[in-house]
Image (cartoon, rainbow over all chains, first blue to last red; front, top):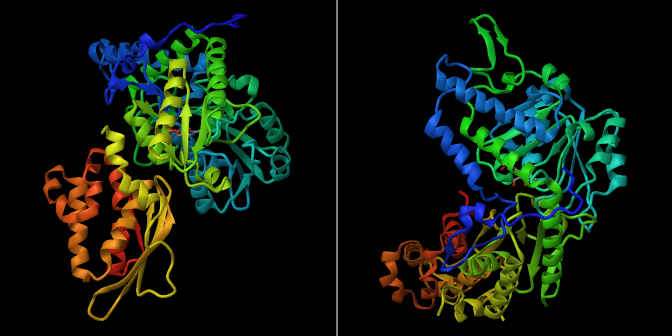
Amino acid sequence: MTAPCAILPDVRPQFPCLDQTVHGKRLTYLDSAATALKPTCVIDAVSEHYARESANIHRGVHALSEQATASFENARESVRTHLNAAHAHEIIFTSGTTASINLVAHSFGQLEIGPGDEILISEMEHHSNIVPWQLLRERCGAVLRVAPMNDSGDIDRDAFRAALNDRTRLVAITALSNALGTVNPVAELIKEAHTAGASVLLDAAQALPLQPMDVQALDCDFLAFSGHKLFGPTGIGVLYGKQTLLDAMPPFLGGGDMIVSVTFDQTTYNDLPYKFEAGTPHIAGAIGLGRALTFIRELGYPAIQAHETALLHDALAALQAIDGVHLIGTPAQRRGIISFLVDQIHPHDLGTILDQEGIAIRAGHHCAQPVMAHYKLAATARASFSIYNNQEDIDHLVAGIRRAQEIFK
Amino acid sequence: MNASEELYQEVILDHSRHPRRYGCPLEHTHCAAGKNPLCGDEYQVYLTIDEEGIVRDASFEGAGCAISKASASLMMEQLIGKHEEEIRELFEAFHAMVTDPDAQKKADSLGKLAAFSGIWKYPSRVKCAILCWHAVRNALDGHAVATTEA
Ligand SMILES: Cc1ncc(COP(=O)(O)O)c(C=O)c1O
């Protein structure tokens, strides 16, 4: 798959959402880190499921149910291929990254984490990789440690190593910061965590749209991501877990599909992955997610990264060339995301003025308030880039910022 | 005038750059915080109200966007000399103006505050315009914190 000089084709025609004006202006969508737009192939996969095979799975004897079950399990196989997981049953469908992390906090927490045991996260985590561990701490008396980042927005590696000790049971860390764009050296962090005897959960919500994550090569124990950030539907996501761990962990939610037999005295739980998939799942969502991952593989990460690297390089240069614009964070390796401030203009006001120009950015704390606290800020403006963005988007962003500066001058 | 210029009128920009009645007084009888956790806006409002219920002093301080700051500044100017009950009525009138397009006719009676009469077109920004107003009402009610997410 590694084309020597990969070039991304123009994918814009495949994203119908781009074919509209906002406030009478060309839509410049620079908020893919919040959620990515959906290509026609994903939209079609979802609507074909509803149009032709709308049925419940794993419980029907009729044709439609069998068809829906096959599509659902094909989607699981697409995820397995994408992550290079050893087994399809290590792929658990959830409602998203948040649900996946909460599943681990509950089930792995119950299995492995007791009073005085430690969970290590980083200062740049999304709230969804902070709060579940605080809740677990309250439930079981565990200790939550935070590996600090330095001012560039990189994890302080020495402090990370120093925080690991023989009580560390789990390291839960993001592969790519949604607030700063920092790419974390996860392969090395995983090795260090394993040496200390800790398991590792990777939050791949931002990383997977932009870089391959091979769970066997990385040897990560858990990996969580959301469908909607990689061109798939909302309300569907994945938890990957190593079979040995998932087998040992107690179920999280109880209900239909996750059992083999139920009497009022005793219930026998189903095998993986169904043990963790109680109730009717988001079948159409899983099918859409499976198709979205195939879409990414068809484009190929080398082409995606070549496109995104060039775009980010140009965007950083263009923003730095504007007087009064300040970039927040200068991580050693960055992908997809730029946080910035404009002198005298609050990010929210900037967001509103840009919106009037048809430009969608995010303004706020990006669900990463500790990152904001590190820089002593309440909010930043954030532009994030995806496969459908191009030079014109950067030009519009620059013109929009200049327009805001004019209004606020 | 396009939409951005309509929203960021000179009077709003002026009051956001140079907020009036800004700062923490040595003494006050009522105070409350106004917080918008979504955008990180955070203000304190301070009132001094005499035995007759008349506002003798009003000020605010804090940080946030141009809309929230200008709204607080313009409001403070209007509070002095008003009775508590009049302030509650003003709150209702301002609230109606920024949320209900049909209430625009009443904007004229609100003086300079009419600068916010177009903000109902920006639902995500209405909370900014109303933030310190909630704080003032909470101060009158004896509550310490107003948040937009209540
Ligand atoms: C790094 C990171 N982790 C977790 C999440 C939560 O994802 P979701 O809201 O889809 O559960 C996000 C979404 O913004 C994110 O950027």
